[in-house]
Image (tube, rainbow, N blue to C red; front, side, top):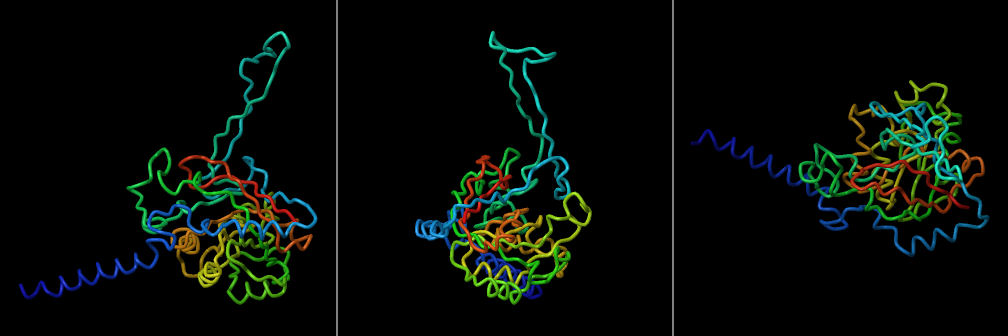
Length: 311
């Protein structure tokens, strides 16, 4: 039996290591039953303070139009069809000749400007707050962490103009936004992050739509893991910007979307992709009231959105 002891010891150490690793990111700081993550920071006080930013009443639509021509991540696509039920060959309904248009969409919810919920990204089939795929993922959607449980996001939004920081109209793909870079832009724009903020990065990446779709999806500039850690420690609710993954890609580490894993699965922080920040940057609207009431697709982990910024 003596030869088995090292093996038993190694097994015990492996189990202990896994338990310790799990304890590092779940249960959540918001409680073992929590399903909304950093959205817990959206308190009435945060909302009131954000509303105080409105001085001109000017509004900005932050979504991009969605169509079959919009570049989308790997397998995703979007098709819209117009249907006129009962109106074939020019027919009408009723003596008042009623006609109408109806639309049918066959597409992925992750096309275009989107909210990625905390049930969207996992680590080895374990998601936010330790939820295992086998326990909550079904072919008809998730039974936990669904997008329908996310409360309205009404908070302060901050946009960081990385094009000015690097002196380029389009920041090159693969450019890493270090903690020092993020802090430098915050200082330049005279912004201090607060708990409950939504932080968006302007990189010029949307300018590639309609010009170079291959480059658009093959790479992108963005934050790395140290920057994600620092932003998360500031107590933000969501991060994102005008790119399709909201992190540097490919990652210098060779890992597949580690920032999204960390932010969504470990910290419960939401990802906002393909946000059109161009008008905000033109107006130097570095901080604003951010308003989002997403479609409540029960069981979905992501959804198309058109958030609004108000100055």
